[in-house]
Length: 321
Ligand code: TXA
Ligand code: MG
Image (cartoon, rainbow, N blue to C red; front, top):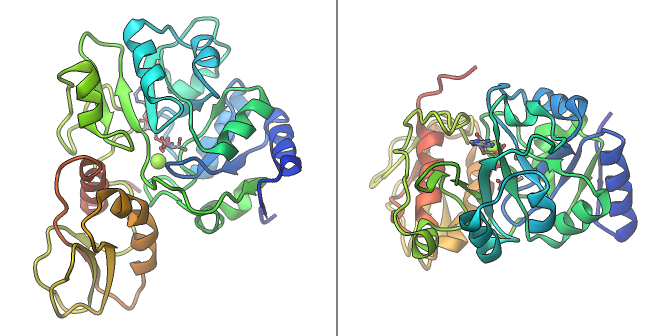
């Protein structure tokens, strides 16, 4: 049965909240990417999320709440974690914290870890849905495992159309790249995934932060597979000239000559604009008529770190099935 795609009126949000409480899956917009949401306290709903995405069970899910009050019922917050939440919530930051024994969360959502990743998204539709559902909502990005994350409702339909009860259409996601995942269970904060909150903003508050190298199998980041965010076509990074038949994802004023098609992530060199365009443009160029997608160099600073992280994984050897 194809999913119902509706605009997020108050009635639609009530309906979506009702579906979540009934154990169904609902896709909804956040300011980062669209999420595939299910009741985080229900093993059955969480299992349905893993099944819909074809996601390995060792890769835990982010649990979404409206804010810090709800989050404190699920995990142990120390002063450092409260500081992070007060400074960056609601927003594009997920915090990995010790899960409370009495949290009521499905253990499947944490993939057997004694921690949980929590996020309070800022998007008004996500906020309204979480408040209406009165449930913690487990929500990975609403794409098939290993593929490019969805930043529009149409992307969700293309990825998971038949597998979700309802899609709330909130338009294009303004940030366009996933949340930063910050692990606060160790002595020093560790950035498990670069994302919507730049490393520089975290360092300004916490001082030095551990950052696992790209592609490194960091034990505390079970879901960080080397190949991920991958379109069907091969992706080639740091391209300065064209190979036959390639399409180009350009950054800055001008692109090298000879490409079959060129899309500009940002002509003005604005990293926020580039992040917002990244996944949608990768999808637009992912067409059989091209031999591959070449990408110009992106500066490794601010949101550029998250962009480069996703691009490196999109370009990595495809070792997953
Ligand atoms: O922006 C986002 O974060 C989106 C929106 C929908 O909120 N969600 C998202 O979820 O990107 P997902 O499942 O695609 O990515 C979650 C990441 C994975 O890399 C996973 O391994 C990590 O968070 N993660 C989740 N729980 C964890 C935990 N307890 N410990 C370590 N890493 C965890
Ligand atoms: Mg994902």
